[in-house]
Image 1 (spheres, rainbow, N blue to C red):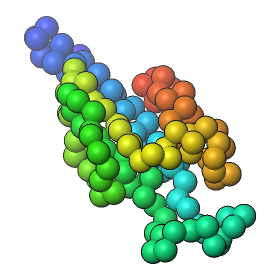
Image 2: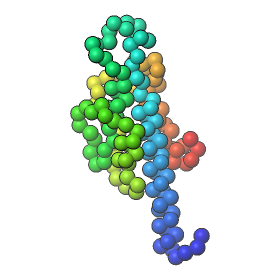
Image 3: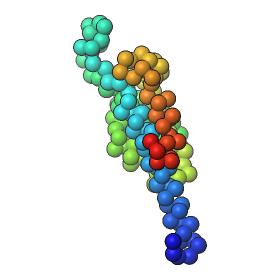
Image 4: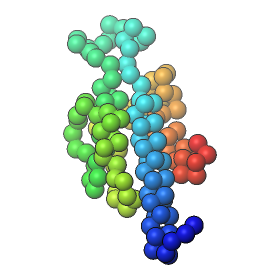
Length: 134
């Protein structure tokens, strides 16, 4: 490495920021991707689907915010919104929130598509993502 000490520190800090951002993105987008999308045709009782039911409400309700958790529901979440929200520099408190009333049952095995949850399995990956091993 060449350059002044301040240039070296800036490069190292930039790499740390990038690594933390990429690990956070990996976890948050992984959680969203692993959130099951309901398909009434595969349910034990397909007729139980409410009229006008559209799968993906839980997946699309993941909201990424800085400084405070999201309040309410908003089914317009996306990977792109998560990518735009996570800061380039480390140091901010970043939240991924989902307020649909059935998100906890989904996390704890209600869906056969995600029997081990979405949050727990992705949070377990975080250290590996930071170390570049996952």
